[in-house]
Image (cartoon, rainbow, N blue to C red; front, side, top):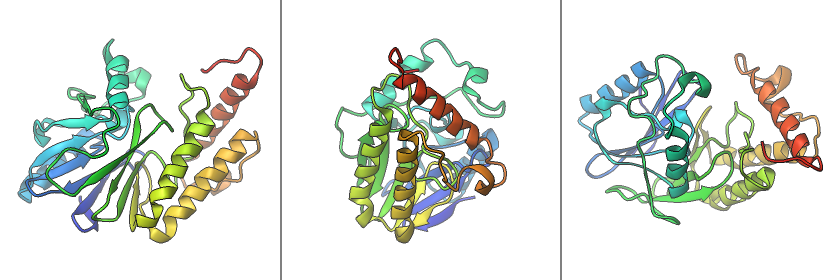
Length: 271
């Protein structure tokens, strides 16, 4: 079911990790951002749009993780975009085929159209489509070529896998020299546009308003500082204060601490 969060902006929440698909209404149809996740949810989304007379004219994947690269034939054959680095990463990762078990993909997720995205020109500033201007804020936190999107006319920030109230910041620990600084730099970029935001939508978790966006940025920054200092984080998304069903996030935190400790050893290397 679609829920309106701002003028011309709707979301569809998946059962999978509270994933948010974003629908932006344009002049000739809609843009879908991070369509997902289960097959019946994608079919429901396609039906809801069709029943309301709306055609999908473009798609966008905020980053190259499988749950942000999905599509369904019922959504049509519109062009699907990502940043140049995101698309290149997807091609490399899927060049040997799709190993669903290795990627942790549930059985009822459609994979036929996984990752069929086109990279926009490097340094592209806007999504090319006939609708409200959508600014691309590319950074290297969480995944290569990750992009947040600012729908400027609507005051909406689509944050990708950042600013979540259920997930801690999850680092890209492969092939990056300083993943913590990459993440802090990305938070500074989001902070720069926060003054123009009335609504923000994380890839997973609850949406928030203007009064919460800075709180989420500060919370993510505090976690990154604790991680950098190898401190025991008091983050409310961890331990007894975590929401029911999200206790596994503590394991992600422990793994990040372990991998960062290895990197700091004299012979440490990204892993």
